[in-house]
Image (cartoon, rainbow, N blue to C red):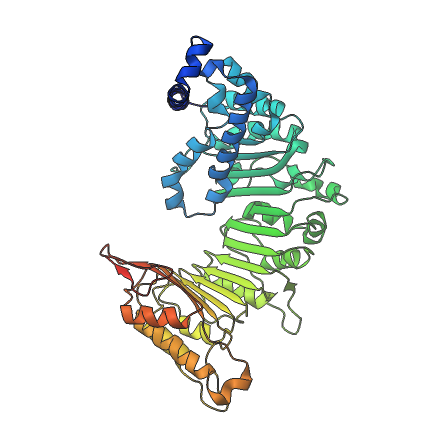
Length: 522
């Protein structure tokens, strides 16, 4: 709920604005005011309902723009999230809870508009779960028949284990399931996997198919989900068709799905965006997540477009050679925080041909196959990994390198080396756009040399008919080198798009304005 400080700050700000408005009116219409008699002072409590409602409409619009949904923060590293989470939660509760705490008139106006009550935040680590449930029931009543977005999150994630988290979630879940037909998006962002509800709750009982986005997210895998949902009733859902289009699911729930991949691929046939995350291999467990069953499930999803696999360990069976690998048809593939064996097994057991691929904090050496996405993004690749060898086998149009200490002048030299005749090509001949972020170990001179040589190669008379491309768009930001005036002038004259804004470890910076030829260096 809104704090007393929040309410006082809001009231003070509005009083100041009204006072300024009164002063402007007084100065501009002094004579008219004298003719009309004594002027009444405008106060918070004298505003007409129509004006109040208009003010709240504008405040609600601004709040929706700036109050990022907690689900967006679950995509960020935990260190960054812990610094910004408190501010996010304060912003989330500014509307509508702060204005309804001012007075009865404001409360009546705000509660009479159902669209102000379509976004709920419930804290799983609250000290008063019964009060939180009361607030949730009020929100469902005030929002009337409008679809609601709800997030079950924590006030703090700076904790190793919370024994009360699962109990609080079970109380919250009881209210949510009773009103499941009201929810459009539902996000669980908890600390441990054992607190997460079973996905079966959101599929069974022939509930109205209104839920389109569901996230079952946790920061640590501490074992099985403990909500006592009976997965022996899975056959009961064989005729159900969920309308979920976006699903983020923890490894424990995924394990239950992959015990019957064919059935669940039918139930979740509308999925377009799927994230699989957070599961550790347990040698003493009777069951682990089978890679073969997971690939079978993924390959049978007819509408899948975006697939993310993050921090998951699979139980891998030997591949049967001579049998064609199942194809997972997606446009976007995101692999994050995976071990060497997992990455190799994924590419060994499945056929993947995405248009966009992100590999972040994963090993890239000696992969069974190198996908050929048009847009390849490599992030946080360790220096023990061979970037040069990996990129030798890739040809695409856009390359993004982020936080890779192995991106240096030697790698740039490889991209400018001409492969001996009769090929008459360079590595990645289709490359036209390059993004570099937080890579401090290369020089601007080496980058210019590479691009200049590739450009001259493409423009040779004997290469005119080969339809080759040169790099024409460059984006450099974050930690990086200084840009000289000579190099800046060449880039500005020869590149279609050139953006440069870097910082150095000693606190210096180098920025080139959009229309400038001279970099601003501090």
